[in-house]
View 1 (cartoon, rainbow, N blue to C red):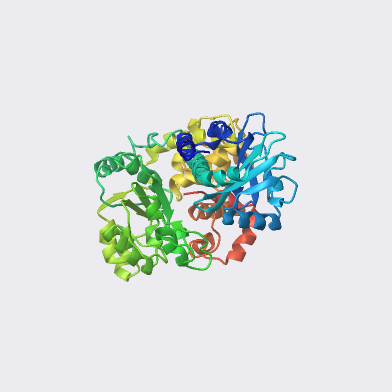
View 2: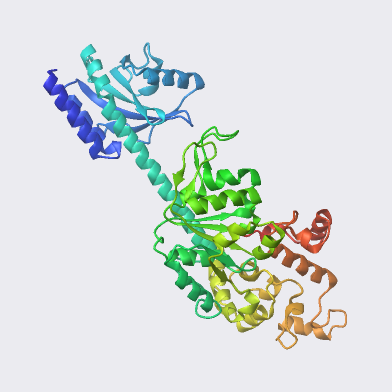
Length: 527
């Protein structure tokens, strides 16, 4: 082949490799180009999966050949070592499948008897794949053809790398969409922009403060009891801000082990500590251009508070084991149910960090102080339960709402959501079993002037049944334990567990739960 002709071919291959991101779209065109210079019958592009140790067909021409995705060949350890060694060598193989070359037999099992050329394709991760050319029946490739293929491996490698990155981005997009749908289901919403329940009633003052602060980048501290909806308020700030199109990352500071806080928040370099097999971006990097919501900020240990303060001041992070500072553009929203001012006085929370995050505080009222929102919230959670459990939507009745309004809600909105979920399951899509969901001591939870379900009223004439307004000791104990589990999100042991709150040994509590039929798993809630 003349030098100018080869240069034209090389240029055309580069153009085609860059024109189509998916290699299956360009395989036929690439094969037609090469067929003008080689006795080519078919062209195959293969991808090597280093984790699964497989060889997968991702591009093929002509269309009568096995189609991409239809062939994925697992390799033995020995086969993979030979394949990797050949890839690293960069050499072009020339021969017949099944004869003298185990690599060719693995790369082209369908091409028995054909004269073959195979070249390794490299990627940013090392061994990427291979391109295999099969000659027409009765014809052979020449040594000049092998040399030509070796010089064409670079555009083929670029095409395979573009294809790999496209599929990675597609997988990430699908995972992100799945996470978004899961979150929407958990929040009981169709879209993130759905209105906040109670925005015009019990949360009116809160939403006014959200609107005031949303457009600025000042740090916001959301205060309120557990389960009052601090994450909903944080998302409302993000969705109304100029950063709404950026990421919203929520981190529960109380759920991160102390020894892993730096790695989670700031990231780590590969090999920086035992178990650090890969580079990891921290939450600050992932939230770049968006909002980082640090929930339960009061649970951070003092050493981590120092490092967090430095990041808030300098807007730069350094990964664990890293050597350079990384600039981050992040809006910080924090939340806690703890008394941070009191913690500052006793030295368990840094005063300078307190001033840094408490620029614009927002206080969320407990549900008992915003009972006017309960009907709307109950309907919202009833719709969510129907969607989550595949049940028919049932609207809470007036009697149901009266029971809910008269209950003190120590677990706030999170507890209300759990009660409605249980009521929907117990009612099996036919009704909401609110009284049963509140516990066997349902009448005990109702104010004296509230109406009582007819079944309970019929028990008033029975001298052996509990009096109206009372419950059996076991029922009262069960309801009390359940309220503690709602508050601790199902946690039994530990400093924030139900046993600690109730002042009994965890083993004793578990024994009573088994006796009373209380399952802690039912009280596990995300967020």
